[in-house]
Amino acid sequence: MSVAARLGRRVRRQLAGFTLLELIVAITILAMISMLLYGAFSGLRSTRDGVGEVSGRYHEGRSAMQRIARELQSAFLSFNRPIDQSLVTRETLFKGSRGSPADRVDFTAFAHRRLERDAHESDQCELSYFGSQDPKQRAVTDLVRRESTVIDLEPDRGGRVQVLATDIDLFQLEYLDPFTGRWTEQWDSSQSIGQTNRLPYQVHITLVLNGGQRSSKGRARGTIKFDTKVMIPIQSPMDFAGLGALQR
Image 1 (cartoon, rainbow, N blue to C red):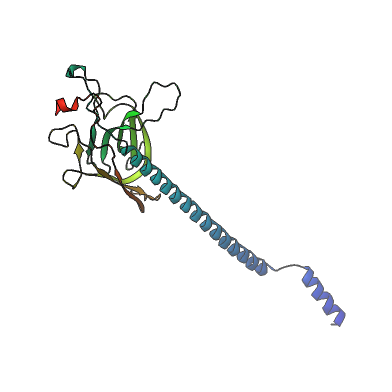
Image 2 (cartoon, rainbow, N blue to C red; image 1 turned 120 degrees about the vertical axis):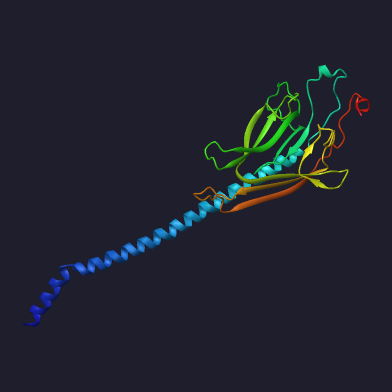
């Protein structure tokens, strides 16, 4: 075979394109590269979403703690009531009780914010913090806040309830008795066997949130803990009319 014939056959072979084996190898390599790129981008996205979710939970917890602390600091009791007990229409209170996974506290405070200029409301209100079952997930407990702008004879009922923090693992309160200097798990200013007409000197607040990842069994995989202590400045019941001495 002449040199010209051999060169012509080589040229025709090159023009014929890739063989089937070469195509399979090329497609396999391209698929592997695509999978690696997809895995890398998917991992980055999952990490970004996870960090964003945890960051959101931290913000939710901090906001809840700040509000609870601020409103507990505005708690108050009052001696002001009619001499005729049949005319009593309101009662101030500070009551804390144990619960699982969330404690409950009901109290009166100078914490209401008027949102309308001509609203017939004062800064006095009834407040409650307690755990409530999430309406969408039975195994999940939310921390809710109750506020009533009218102080009446049922300071633990009525008003509006709103979710303060979702999916909590623990909400715990402890109260420092200024008389004994000891921390107690319960407080009741309305009972003679409790802390009659007294407020705790400090409240220790512990809030634990699910970190944003929950297993199929409903158990939290990671938790975020918040912890603080707040002092209640108004220790003595308010007595504008001087009736406190008559009731003691």
